[in-house]
Image 1 (tube, rainbow, N blue to C red):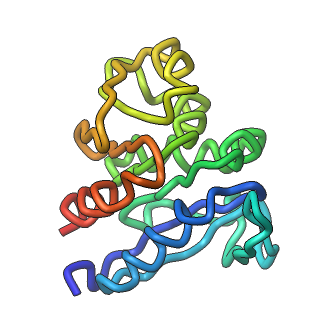
Image 2 (cartoon, rainbow, N blue to C red; image 1 turned 120 degrees about the horizontal axis):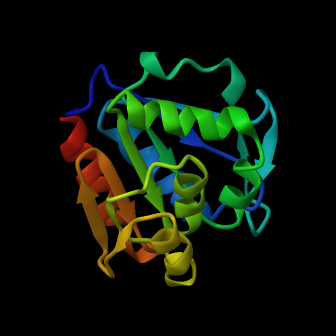
Length: 172
């Protein structure tokens, strides 16, 4: 229970990648963290790319990041929907500015670009968004996980073990 007393957010939205929500959510809980699912609305059931449900505990506009230790952003096409909501983007930006762990996997790099937090940072992400990350000022590395301070990024579901290991390390 290395994360006992830690509080984390997993962002949720329609069209999320199943493993990229559920693997970190369950893994962090297994380590003792309190994990809150946050969507654009509270109490809404969001469906993955294949229809698997996850229900949000809270709405992004109602969450004060100062009460949390970090935020995990899954991929799939959910980040493209998330970034259309200013409160969700602001939540990510505030987490970064308050030196919280910000962990993004796969297409979640889109949220990092919208939060405008990538200038001068080393990151990875799904290969198809490499140009977006670079144009936002990041240095792209093709690696299973890239850690730049408290910013943790990975490319795809296969990288989840390394991704979660680095989140746990950063919070321990």
